[in-house]
Image (cartoon, rainbow, N blue to C red; front, side, top):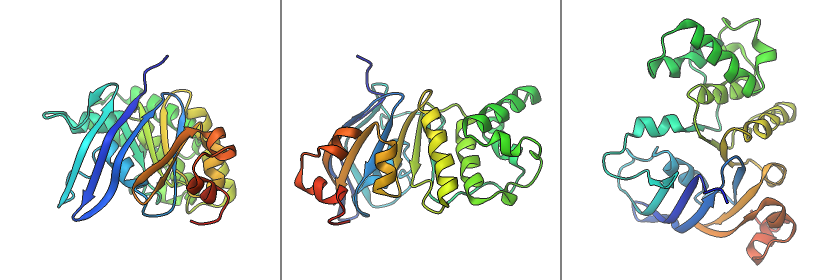
Length: 252
């Protein structure tokens, strides 16, 4: 059996006096889409941010437990956080392309990582945009401003920008929450393809999206992990009454 890509081991997390996560343990499988679902305030985004250490500079917080990537503690003393974030990319709900051209948005990260060869950079641009299902729409206007793209295209560009650093894990926090149904479908279709090569953890913007995408699904409520199972099992035969109530629309 393939070892989990990410292991969250008895993680509790506090913002000031508020407990955001309560003794969370789960194993994220490689080359699969793991969905974190539940009402707002359940701790889903907090967990995403902990997996690539985005909360490091947030004051008055504390964490217990471990987060392992390929069996190694990402909070171990001396760990290179920049290197970690190359391995674990993150895409947010609001697409925020850089004020550069479409191509330069994708080249930006690899350039910072020390890649200077133009041919290699062009290969990365094409490969990343193809993977994000955007290449066919922009290949003839790569020098146009990224701001000229539609919202759905900008979000896929942000995904391509993350992919340009060849991450192993891709974290997505409601990446389609502001998109129209057609753009949402295109982003979801790109995720189906991307999981062949990446491990994806996503906070979806709806239960319907969660059910469409989930190879595995974790239901969070008030900082607790209520249920974590293969997606088809959690949505068809949930075991906990609170999960049943949520997926059937009785609350949330």
